[in-house]
Image 1 (cartoon, rainbow, N blue to C red):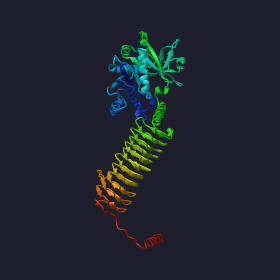
Image 2 (tube, rainbow, N blue to C red):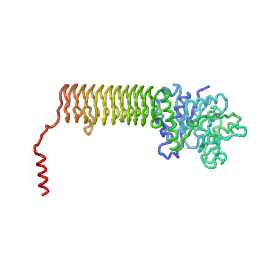
Image 3 (tube, rainbow, N blue to C red):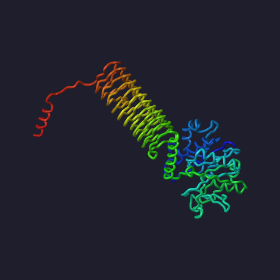
Image 4 (cartoon, rainbow, N blue to C red):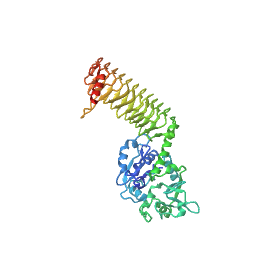
Length: 495
């Protein structure tokens, strides 16, 4: 069987979403809705995926941004490609396929998916394509049974049980009361013989309540030509649930989330409370990792083997290496957390945490923060665009920005790098084994040499040589009898 051309219809207006964001760009577990069927089609072995976009082209930037993901790895064979076409006029699903006609291979099977039916799996697509090929039919429609079929086209069967027609139900008058009682619905997913589809598309008619070109009419036209039309039943209705409003979006997101969590659990990940855990679709988690309640793993986060994440932890686009621990109330974005690391009650934004390192509780690692192997970033510490060297410690109540902290340095509470002069950012360099006193301000650009010390309460504005003690504070003066004189003065003022 030739690899199918998969057409993804993603040009719908989505007015019921009541959103300035196009429906296909609403996120489901870290991936735009319209991209879900694209990825599934590539994983199913599509020869080519044709995405039908609206004139505003909301998916164009998404497809460009995700080009690397779509072109490599698990998503697709190297020969597959994704092509974007525009449906110039919003004239229905039939009009959308007509817009894609020039990109359809006449000699190959064609699978049509909907951009607002995001949970269709690669397996379901492959099964439909295989059933279509085996039947030899000109068209195969995927149907399923729904307890609440509202909004779906109904599959009307004849006395012999064969499919007679599909009745749309988008507007009053499209279907009769009896037809609206039917629970078998058209999922909007089809397989066609390429030649047969292209032959009848020009004959679609907009003679219906909505004045649109309905793709299911292709089935009627093929039957009229004496062609065979088959139905492929999808047993799991969740795979073909459509999204028309935010209620349905929440339902689909919950189903997708549960499937993601189950995939990880079956791969050897412990998730203590799936109902209180949020993991995006592109997250990777290693065997024996432990995800505790209230945790969110966002974007392309990677959690390594043996990691412990949470509770109440969020990581986005984060790498968590083997045996790392990411712990309560923590968020990380575009970051790396290494073996046996512990991150508690922290927010990590494109940061890196090395093996055996400790972060938190209540720490904030901003973009390009690197906490090296065995290092510690403690309570109420913020780190930005800085490297905390191996075994170094910033235990609490500190801000480290645009700095390089050397191996086994230990910075006291209240350490601040003053990295901004009002116009530009400057770096601070802190050497190996430096011992910083509490309440030290380092005014960049400044360097503290290896094995140096800073005295508590110092404002360091000049370089401290290796092994030296940097003291930069006013001398203390004690004024004897001050309290008594002050009280006397206040008493005199009242009189």
